[in-house]
Amino acid sequence: MQKSFGGPAIFLDRSDINTDEIIPAKYLTEVTKEALQPYILEDLKLEGFDSKGEALKQAKVIVTRENFGCGSSREHAPWVFEVNDVHTIIAESYARIFRQNMFNCGMLAIELPKASIDQLMELQERGNVRIEVDLSRQQVNALTDGEEKQFGFDISPFDKALVEAGGWVEFADARY
Amino acid sequence: MGKTLAEKIFDSHLRDEPFPGTKILNLDRVLCHEITTPVAIADLVWRNKDRVFDREKIKVVIDHVTPSKDTKTATQAKILRDWARRHDIPDFFDVGRNGVCHAIFPEKGYIRPGYTVIMGDSHTCTHGAFGAFAAGVGTTDLEVGILKGVCAFREPETIRVNLTGNLPQGVYAKDVILHVIARLGVNGATDRVIEFRGSVVERMNMDARMTLCNMAVEAGGTSGVCMPDMTTVEYLWEFIQDEFDSKEEALEDYQQWVSDADAKYTQTLDIDISALEPQVTYDYKPDCVKTVRDMQGTRVDQVYIGTCTNGRIDDLRQAAEVLKGRKIADSVRGIVSPATPKIFSDALAEGIIQIFMEAGFCVTNPTCGACLGMSNGVLAEGEVAAATSNRNFNGRMGKGGMVHLVSPATAAATAITGVITDARDL
Ligand code: SF4
Image (cartoon, rainbow over all chains, first blue to last red; front, top):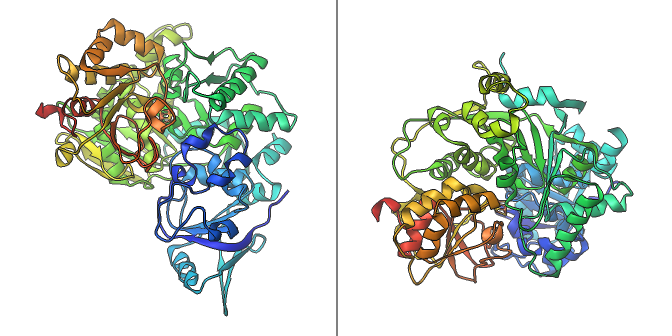
């Protein structure tokens, strides 16, 4: 089943945020996704960011920079987002395994050019940014007090099919 | 137009192309360890699909935390062990016979030129040293691999890295790959295969080639690859001698995978390594690289020698050469983890373990251990390590710890002085 995409956004204005920062290795001993929930982005050091704060708790969309999710192959990284209801990441670029893991889980790893990410980042100063994703029209809508911005995005037909199927297991099972 | 090794493997393993640009490949090997596989198993059971596509193509090891350190890691090991038994998987390596995945699977002869290999582990790119297409994947890809024997990839473009010149005395494959990563950047090879070519690679043994390919992912690469040649054949010979009449015949067969002279590359990097110095990382990204002499004097609390990057026999020999007849500094904790039982026992036979022990090192069983800060040498906050591993991320070897990535020789020299040291200056 397709997940829902959109809601309050949080901004992580840094490149190369790695999987150890997203979910430290010491929690990889958990064998359920749910157990990861409290540890989201626990080791991320970024000015103004608090991994235990309200902003992250509310967030359903993350906006960030280049090479997001680099490092280990751990799917615990998308899972910790999934169990925290963050189903959408918008970045300039991703590490390959992380990006594929997101789509394999039926979640969205959207790529936008730097100029668009810059515009999104600027919105955060106004506070309370909501981002809605229209997958069928391949469009991101960012809303804040008195302003709305729209960005089209590309997604490969395969990745789109995975998201629509609810993930790779469902897709592969129906086909192979 | 000629084809690259990766393109040839993609062509020969293509199962389906559901959408343009998406290739579903048949898999020759699905490798499993106890961190990322149990969740895939649990999901298969939950979906009522607890099956395996081919029990002989799946290879299984417990390596990250072994022997188990607590109830949680014991549970992970048990899930994997029970599953391997339930499906009668013949190649399963448990305590006493286990070692670091990317060292033990090649050592058993499981990886061959032209193979497709996946594992729920980012350093699966290591196996490209044999002329295979080997890629790290997440748990869902692993799960589908186990169940169906397929994996989806975007057909990768290839970056060719030509390494020419002569490796100077005291400079090793680890220094070369750190330099290459610094040149490419941490995402310079994303969605690409890095082909390591040139006379330097041709002269390298398989241990050194695995060190090169191991860190391809630190530049974002899908796989690192080396061309199969006589060195590959010699390494594999004990496992393939029934398949071929002679080594020459094996070589001829493996040549089919070698990239064509007119293959197309997205980027070519020519590096003459004749003047390369020993390299070390600073900061928390593997492309932050300096010469060891530029970092000389940086204090360390722990030296860790081992891992899938540099825990093979050749690596231990290089470290032992530096350590021989010397003692490590009182301020340093030295830990060495031979990557497999065979490496351990070869090191024993060669007197290498004795050298480590006399120098004051703690010798552990084969395991990933401290590499990812889960056991056997976790750092305290504010502590600094020099390690032969592949990742220096913040907190990698323990929350608040700092890791400097180095070659085994540099690690050994650093253990002796207690500060980052170029082995040539001892
Ligand atoms: S040795 Fe380290 S990098 Fe290699 S597989 Fe083990 S944890 Fe991963």
